[in-house]
Structures are given as structure tokens and as C-alpha cells.
Length: 112
Image 1 (cartoon, rainbow, N blue to C red):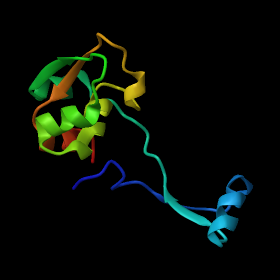
Image 2 (spheres, rainbow, N blue to C red; image 1 turned 60 degrees about the vertical axis):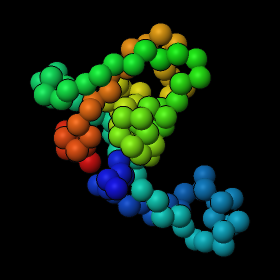
Image 3 (cartoon, rainbow, N blue to C red; image 1 turned 180 degrees about the horizontal axis):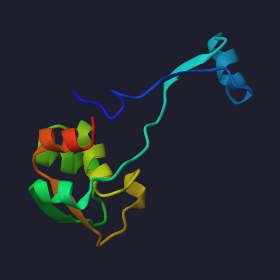
């Protein structure tokens, strides 16, 4: 399964900020993936992908929409990213979300 972290840099972190975590794990450093910057699709890229629309309502969840449209709830982040959100708590009731229907092409556009 493509992940938004496939092309992320691997970091070795030994900063003082993580000292309590390192101590609890008995480690000298923590290895993790860097968060990739969120780059939104261009107007031309958006126009090249067939989309449907969903009006966000109370109780909606991105993972449910991903499961409905892609058959896999783990692609919730594609819908969030396509619409410029980092997380679903930022989406206000009544907001219309564009849901790209061609997942494979969308992942290519998002460089995943």
C-alpha cells in the first residue's frame, strides 16, 4: 500500500526534547520518518482527475469516506490532503469536500 511517508527522510533524533522517551525505551536515539511538506495539487492536476463531492456533516469521518470510495479506510489522508487539510478536526460542518475518484492517478499527482 502506498503511504504518504514512502519518500520521507529517515531521521535519527537524540535531542534533549525526547530524552524522557529515550530513557523509557532504553535508547540513545529515536529513529523516525520526517514529515513531508504538504503540497496541494495544481488547478490543472485537479482538473485532470474526476471527482465527486461530499458535504461534511456532523459525525462524518474521513476513514469512512475513504472506505466508501476506495475500499480501504487507510486512504483517509488522500481526501484530507486533496482538500488541503492536515486532519479532520479542521473540517467545518457544511464544507464541501472534493473526493478524487482515481486513487492511483491521485497518488501519482501527490507524489506518493
